Each structure stands twice: as C-alpha cells, then as structure tokens.
Image (tube, rainbow over all chains, first blue to last red; front, side, top):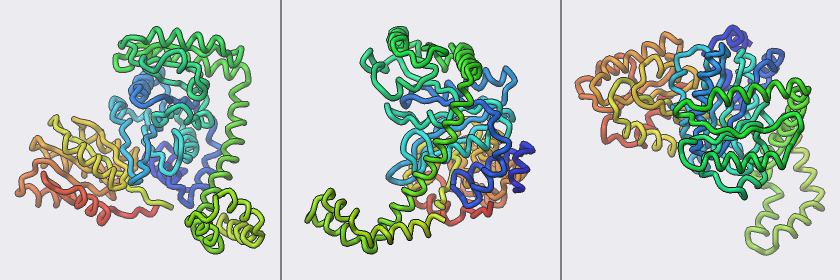
Length: 325
Length: 134
C-alpha cells in the first residue's frame, strides 16, 4: 500500500491517515495490518491508567520530556470516553502535552472509545502497531480515567503504571481487586497534597503481602508531575521493569499471551456485534421478543424455548455465516 | 463503517478568553462530534501540527484579540503547505463584518460571531465537511 510505504518513510501525514482508517475499522484495515506486521514488535509499550483527574496526561507529558532527553522517540495514544448519549467526545488529554507539539520525535494521537466498553477502544492495538511500525522507541498509552475494573490495558502493553492521588483511600481500598492488582509501578501523584506518604506506605504493605512474582517487586513512588518532581525516578522504575521482564524471558511470554488474546477478543467482538444486528432485525425472533415485551413470560422461560427452536437457530447460524464474510 | 467527524477547536494568538471556545467544544460534543481543544495561546504552527497528527476534518479558530486577519489565513496557508487543504476551516470570535469577505477569500469557509447557535454551526460543518477517499 502506498500509504504504508509513505509511513515507513516517516511521513506523519500518512501515519495520521492510517490511524484514522484503522480507528474507523475501514475495509482497508486487514490490508494495512498485514503490510505493517513485519515492522512491528520493536517499540516498548507503557500503559498509564488510574482514576480521572489523577494527572495521567501531565505525567505523560513530563515523562515524554525525560524520554526525549535520552534520545528516544515517543508515540502517545491518549484515550477519552465517547458519550453514550450523543456519540460525541471531548478529547482533552493533548492540552497537557503542548511542549511536544513541534517536536518531530513525538507523535500524539487522541482517540475516543467509540463503541468499546472499558478504558480503551478495541482498535487501540492496531493503532499501537502503526506507531510501532513507524519506528517510535516508546509508546505511551493513556487510558480513559478508569474505575476499578476497566483492565483491558493489561492486554495491550508491556508495563502498566497506575496513577493515584493522595486522597485515593485507606487500607481497604488498597486491598480491593482490579486496579490495585495490575500495576507494575504505582505512582501517587500530586504528592504536594497531604497523605501521599501514607498512601505509599499502605500500597507497600499491600504489595509486600501480595508478591505476584519473585523477580519484580512492584514499587510505589510519589510524584508531582506539574512541578516536574519524581519523573526521572518513574522513568528508572519503568526501565527496570523492562529489564526484569527481558532478563526473565517474560516479555516474550507476555506478548505471546497478548497476541492470543487479541485474536480471541477479535473473534468474540465481531461475532457478537454481527449477532446483535441479526437479533435486532427481528424476523422469526420477533415472536419471542413480543412475548417478553408484553410480560407474558419471563426471559428465562423464553430462553429455554429459543434453545430448542431448531428452525430459528439454523436461520441464525446461516445468516451469521453470510454476514460475517 | 461509522463516520465520525473530528474537530480541532483552537485559540491562535495571545488573547486569554476561551469561554466561547469551550462552549463550542461542549456543544459540538453534544452534537456527536469528536472534539479536541488545544488550549490558549497557540501558534498557527502548533495548531496545524495538531490538526495533522489528529487527522481532523475541521479546524475551528477562535480569536478575540483582533489579530484574526493575520492568524486565520496563516493557519489555512500552513494546512495547504502540509497537504491538508481538504480541512474545513471555520472561525469565530470578535470579527468585524467588514473583515469577513477577506477571510472568506483566504479560505475560511464560515465565520460565526457571538450569538451564533451551536445547531447552526453543526449543520454548517455537516454540510461542508469534505468526504475523503483515503
């Protein structure tokens, strides 16, 4: 593809255009991914996640400055949520990253979650691949400000940085499942506010008790991104995690697992979305819908009828087969 | 394949008033657009670089300082230089009516001053945004 050739020759316009196509799930997407695939796998990918307003964008901005001083090129994917009401989005992460606008070694792209649940759009892996093929040394992925369970970042990156603020909570919060389990590095940002050292102590207590692996002790740091404090230390910890992954042969394992997940997720999403279109089309299924709508039967009883309705199931399977190609 | 229209709302120049830009950002979001706001005091170079990387369909410029006759055409010119003259450029702010014809000649497709309704701006964008092949 011509656009791919241009992108590989470090044409920013072509890269931007390719990202749009992949993000739109345009019909060219398989062709694009196919032709860049041999050029991927070289970038190191770092995910930054945590609740809204924790300073993720500012932290990424300052971290990027450190990376640039070390001579590394950077790709940034910054995700904000799509409105479930209007389908629109306000993409506001870039505003914190202004010092890098004119640096040709930094490519910043904002993404809306569009149809996806969780902290990342489903097309983010394709976008990461494009930045990777475009030769960025480090790719920083900022998730939507997440709650406790939006953990799809695990399947897309090599190192996860969880950003919290001093008010994030007490011991009980640090004991909860989800977000607190996925960090490879924890940062308590805005540490000029009271309580940062306490939260770090709580986190350390939790992390010591819950050693996930012997080869990496998850650190908890304080930082003040807006004042440029603690950023060099954050970089060092990310780099140590990278080294540890590599030395233990874990990086390859992790990426193998992610590739597998990417395919299985893709199949799941594609089939589910086609299938819900099919169901909404109605047809013979309308009869069942009406029974439930009128409240004549409960949904469990209708489900039991559906799974023994051979005619309906066969129609669905045949239509699905046609639609999915 | 869903069509999402991506808009960059930008404040070129040195004035520090962005209430209008923020109202527009929120309004267009509610109209179903994906909106990026650059923040205050942007140079035309920075705005165009953001438009390029984000691959936007529309750039909305807001200027209240009186420098619009210089800044708006400068953005259009840089977009052209970067081979993005397919971007729809619109402007707003305090623009005297006698400046409008000049701005339109320079490639600013629509000018929306104080009192313009969000609905009208959204309609203008939908009607004038260019479909791009690839």
